[in-house]
Image (cartoon, rainbow, N blue to C red; front, side, top):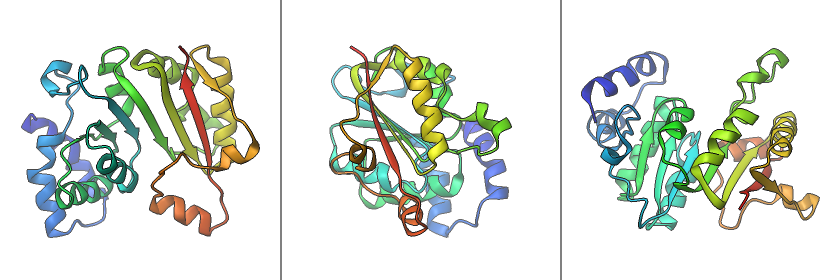
Length: 228
């Protein structure tokens, strides 16, 4: 990737994040530039083979536990992980190197930029994991799940593809469902209340999720489908 993109991406993050280990710093400097997605360039230059392989997007991968485990379990699927915080990216890089994962690419800014960059009907699955709840009422418009972002996702998801949203904030789930119910592009068909609390089969739990459970906050999993 372009050198300027790498420098611009992390000058703020390096000032504000926790100190990286020597190994993490080396991976940020040497491995990350090879994996970064640059939406300023044509999609074809990203070398993602969407003709022969599925492409999944994970928005907000945190420390990368869910993304790395899912990528390892699905070696024939390509992944793009979006995460703006350097410490989380550095943790994922350690997993990528340690487990020799060759099917993960990274974007270090607002996921909407990648969504706008992707070709239509290019994604087979999207994960949105524990997004920023923006709890103050005046900030709710900043939440990721809105009618506008659902329109963006509808364009890039294949018909019948999955959108999986996980959150431990009840109000976030309520506003997300409100946006989903207003959309003609997505279908949510819960079979029971228990289905809301049950993660998808083979779900890798994250550190944040385990912390939420310890503190008595129970995640809700919305399993939504792109309408056919």
